[in-house]
Length: 352
Image (cartoon, rainbow, N blue to C red; front, side, top):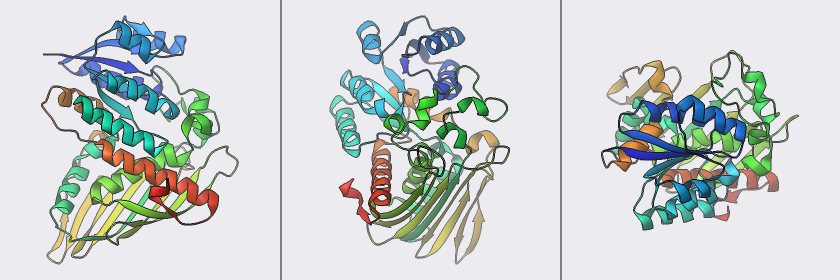
């Protein structure tokens, strides 16, 4: 049995991660592409040998029968495009961040439930083997009730926010087929924000997915410096049950240096440390320190895993490795973060 998959949005990440993953899967038929930019549509269709090409998801759905779809359009279009696909009974992998407006996320989750399809959110770190092991151990009570969390994400994206993606095209990022449109990361009306939406959302989703915590209240500061969107974010968080934590993120890392994703989670009976790109993870308890097996470099940020999971979930061979509920909580926290920074006050996540 093969899964008929369509890809909506043929920009950088779709052509770098999702389409190669789908093309390599033995049970996938990539049946159609949709992309508003004719040049990008042609480049992607030619590279991945997909003949059926459309400008919009609506045109694609009217002409082609799908089992599953990848949505990799700019953030502001995540909700309307995914809504249309879910209404058609299609399993969907939606790129992060799930949505800009949390209410839209709740609507998408309900649509997926109503139509009996899977909705996955594109967070590759949820497929990191160390992350999976840590999550299982925390959920099993290995470190006791979680009391404090701390996460850091430092990335190389300043020029994306400045509207100059081409400056990363030579040895920094792999634009093998299509580069990002300058507005995708620079324009707040398109992206919903800067570092908070594009990068910090990775760390937030990882923090929530690992810990099982639900954010309730945040106090945040953001800084844009010379840019039209935020480059750096600092957030204090209160979670349900009394746990507290911090998130710190910057997109100003100098090219040529390794990006940083680090998370520490402290419980009543121990704590875990996790350095994603170093491949270093450990569980600390009164019995001592257990260091987890070091994954391969490719396993540390498995960018193709979400698309593979989409196919396996559509076939009923796997569960949802990156569920939309975590995507919704992430979107709500990011929205509250921006509101807190703008209004210079603590904000309840439900206000967002």
